Length: 236
Image 1 (cartoon, rainbow, N blue to C red):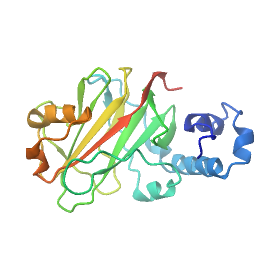
Image 2: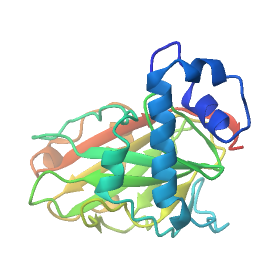
Image 3: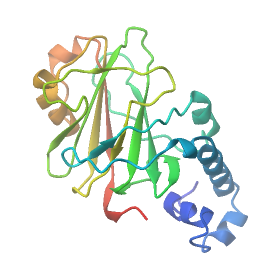
């Protein structure tokens, strides 16, 4: 899509019949037409696998166990959608390739650089390994207040969780709370487990733009940082 195209949010509203304003543009825009077709395809493939998240709150994000096995074929079917921003790499070798799927008011999409988050969005994280020795992943985020949220694992004393099978998301979804943004998502993929007590401050610093400490750089860690814009309000 070009800078003159409606936003992804506006196109979603058009697709759901909530706003007919983009109709004229869509009728003459091959890119927007292809984007809408891809959205319909991914929604048809995986929408029935999402269930409402539980109301349990952990910190300022909430977790729910959602069985959403989006296969690699589904990802290939939506290549017309932009991928997330290229992650920041500080370790040796290529960065971990991260994709984020978002469910907003029942509409599924891959997050692109033009997208944002609002309260009540639910996201799932896909980590595409490229190193045969990669075994474990640790994920956290720092919001606009500087608070570190631990997602995988949630336990502040815990260590990395095993990487899922190729094409599968990390277990469970993350529901966005109303804390100020942006969300600076940090993903560390490693050959052996990393534990929060040892790497928590490094994750916080990396989220803010600092390099990872030398001991981590020597362990074959693939590090990625995704800055996810966040606006006030809730998903509608």
